[in-house]
Amino acid sequence: QVQLVESGGGLVQPGGSLNLSCAASGIIMSIYAMGWYRQAPGKQRELVALFTSGGTTDYADSVKGRFTLSRENAKKTVYLQMNSLKFEDTAVYYCNADLNPFVGRRGVYWGQGTQVTVSS
Picture 1 (cartoon, helix red, strand yellow):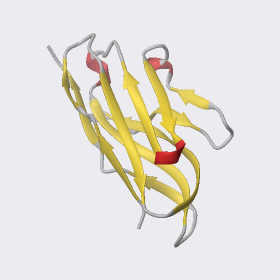
Picture 2: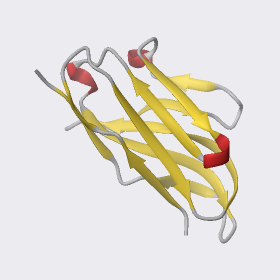
Picture 3: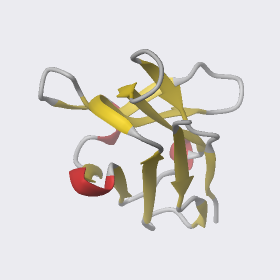
């Protein structure tokens, strides 16, 4: 069974940094896209950063220049380095992957979410 396991959330002061990681577990044939979304209270879930199936890396305008998405393909893991954090970055961050498991069909998978709180 495929799971996306997230870690690295927490409480940080404005201007601080956090690094989130997401590892895909299970037998996976291919990963087509993988990255992070977030959802703040009372708001819709939005894209933060994503390695797309087309080979690009997409970032939300609000995080460009502050957040960096990276990956280790052999570990099926993506990382989100978040610098210069702002109050408005407070949200639950969800890992997302479009992948093809060994058992079952290609589909979009979500992690359980990790809380990031920016507060003084």
